[in-house]
Length: 544
Image 1 (cartoon, rainbow, N blue to C red):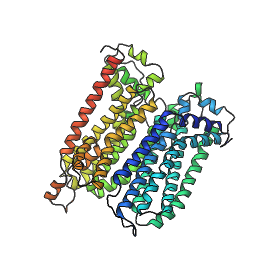
Image 2: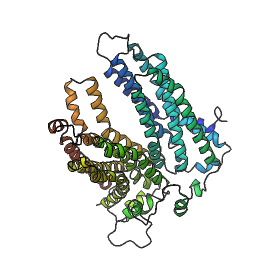
Image 3: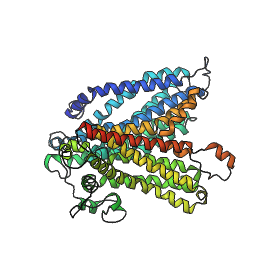
Image 4: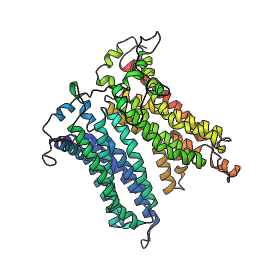
C-alpha cells in the first residue's frame, strides 16, 4: 500500500511520465549538459593526468555545479504543486476521504514528484563518465557527488511537498519553497567550491554528514505533512479550506499583519466597507483589497520573515562592514523580487479563466486598458513594497557610512535598478497570465523568462570568458548583459575602496551598461504592454 500497490504513486507516475513535456524536458536537459561539456572540453592534444589537471577539474566542477543548480531549481516545480494541485482541481477532499493512509499519500506524492527529476539526473551519467579519463576526479568522488546530488534533490522535494500542504495555491507554495531552498542550494555550491582542494574531506562529508542531515529533515517534514493530512483543517464545499483572516491574525506566530496600520496597509489594505467613488478603477480595487489576499496571509508573512532573516547578515556585511560589496546586496534584492514579484501578477488573468469569469469581465463597460493597468498596478504595488523593505537599509547606510557620501549617484542607480526590476517582473508575469490558460503554467513560464533575461547572459558571458577568452565573439557577448539587472548593478562605479586610485576606479567601472539596461527594460516593458492591449482588443474583439 505504501510503495508497490500505492494508487496515488501509480496514477501520478502514469500521468507525469507519459506526458509529451517529459520527453521534451529530458531532451533539452541532456542537450544542454552535452553542449556545455562539448564546448568546455580541453583543447590540448596531450593532457598530464599524473596530477589533477586544472582544465579537467574545472570541467567536472562546472558539470556538477550546473547540474546541481538546475536540479535544485526544478525540484520545487515538480513537488510544490503535489497537494495544492489537488486543491485547485477540487479533488483534495476526495483524497482525504479515501482509505489510503496519510503517510502512503505523502510518500506516493513525493516519489512521483521526484521520479522524473531522478530520471534526468541518472541520464547524465554517461556524459560525466566521458570526463573521467581526463583525470581530476576518481570514480568514487563522482559517486559521492551523485549521492550528494540525489540527497539534496530529495530534501528539496520534501521541503516543497511540505509547503504544498500549507497553501491552497501552487504559486504561494512555489515561492515559499524557493525562499527556503535557495539558501540551502547556495550553501551547497559554496561548500563544493571551497573544498575543491580537499577531495577527501568533501568525500567524507558527502557520505556521512550530508545523508544524515538530509534524512533528518525529510523525516521531520514527512511526519508533519502526514499529520496535517490525518487531521486536516476545516474544509467546506469542494475541499475549500475555510480561511478567517481575523482568526488567522490572532493565531499567527511571529509577524502579524495589521491591514489598517502603516506600513501594512501599503501592501495589504483592508477590505472596502463603503461604496466605490466615481472614477475609481473597480478592477484595481478588487485585486488589491480582496483577490490577492483572499487565501489568507500565511504566504505573505513567511515571505517577509524569511527574506528579512536572510537579509540581516547580508546587509551587515555588504552595506556596512565592506561597502565595496554593495552590488551583492542589490543582487539579493533583485533575486527576492524575481521570486516574489511574479506571484502577485501571474494569476491575474488566468484566475479569471479558471473561475470562468473572464467572459463576464470582458463584456463589461470597462476598457481593456483599465483592466490591464488595474491588475498590473495591484500586483506591482504589493511586490514593490515588499522589495522596498529590503532596500531601506541602503538608504540608512548612506547616513551611517561615510563611504557612500561621495557615491550618492551610484546609490540612486541601485534604487533605479531595483524599481525597473520590479516593473519587469510584474509586466512579464501579467503578459504570461494573458497568454496562458492556467496560473501554474503562467508562473513557471514567467520564472523561465526571467531566468533567460537576468541570469543566462551572465552564465554565457562567464562561460565564454573562462573557456574562450581570446575569441572574437567573447567581446560581443558582453553586450548581452544589458538585459540583466545584476550585471548593471556590478557595473556601476562605486568608489568605496580608499586604497583604490581614481584612475583605477574609472578604468574598472563605467555607466554604459546601466544606461543600456535602463533603455532595454523600458523598451521591453512598453512592447509587452502594447502586445497585451492588442491581444485584448483584437484577440477578444473588445473595443477600447
